[in-house]
Image (cartoon, rainbow, N blue to C red; front, side):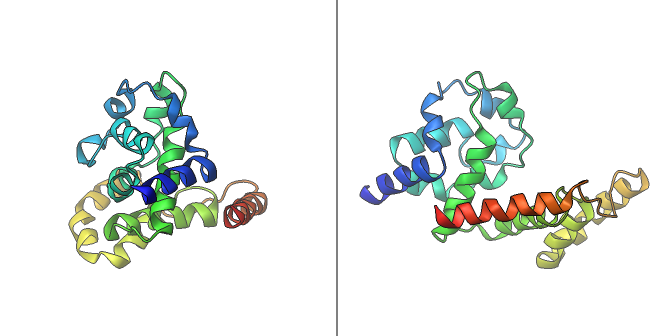
Length: 181
């Protein structure tokens, strides 16, 4: 339990997690999340665990790894809590202490790599990164990929943000600040 309280304090200080103290436990975040049925705990439950100091259980949950940053929860939160940002912070914290759900971590890395390189997500780059580690999943999803390509719903060529140099400077500064925290 003591280790849990240390982790909770670290989350509150390093990742500005004290904002979840404002959560009124209404469940709007969980109700608006398209992936909530696949999560061990909805965001509301996860934040309740974190507030109570049950960090071991919270960090071992798959909840934050299923968050795809759609921001439905943030838009609908009556308290304006940055739920998606906290999910990202919990992912980082879990990875830092060695908790890594293998398949979900690969999916997370596959989405993150194109964003760091181009400043935005590129469908094919994300799928390719994940498929290299999980060829069975790529094979199973191939029919869907073909349908999306036929409807011109896949972006094949990466389009960097307008000021990619500036974006990369911001990313480097963020990583530097993170290392110092």
